[in-house]
Image 1 (spheres, one colour):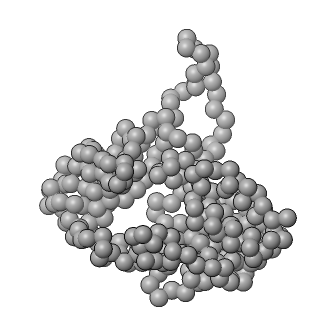
Image 2 (tube, one colour):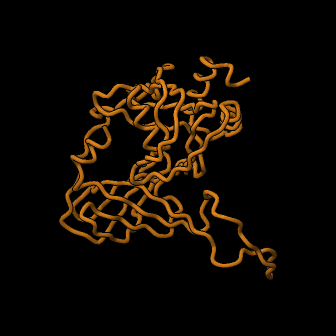
Image 3 (cartoon, rainbow, N blue to C red):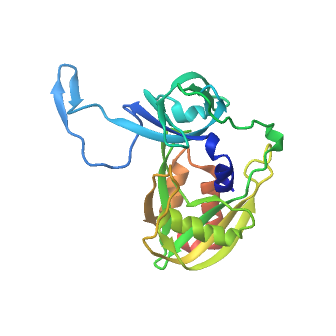
Length: 265
């Protein structure tokens, strides 16, 4: 669903690259060395920087860009890449953490703005979360940086179900794209409404038993994922210990425990 929308609006969609000096936790890249300085221990070499990526839309043809506030929050540098490949440094005109909206400006003219409509006219596609189990009973998970919580999050692989796609097939597709694991037997564990206050879509939880590594990963353009294989019991314990755990990912683990309590003993 998202891919179809992005293709239709391609001239108005932009990529946003940010740099945040001394950013949040990163995936392991090796030990950091320290030295004693006038103010105590100091890291050797330059201060680490976190690079982030996100997307946005051309709001007006004069170079006004609309994006999420969490994408640019704390950034010391922001670069906007247009659909034709041109890149421009951006300045922040304003942002609102509560509504998670930010407005940027780049020095470009004659852009193609997106058509803005009321939120009540938007139809949100269904989602799927997969619970891929290896033949030896390990659960395949992905770890990624979440800009909203500014922290790393370990979750079940998943994503948007394409229009007309079966949830079971979507779970198989998303799992191989994100983790490189495929195969096994697929079964539906349950369905929920993620946010019924403002959305009518559903999230489906799918168990994939007996997956194997294929090496054929194809994550989306802005996804940086670390693939893990852990025991379901350890995955649930880690999720419960994280106050910023993705709520749907936690519910997926509870669904798995209801169906396969033997995996958590």
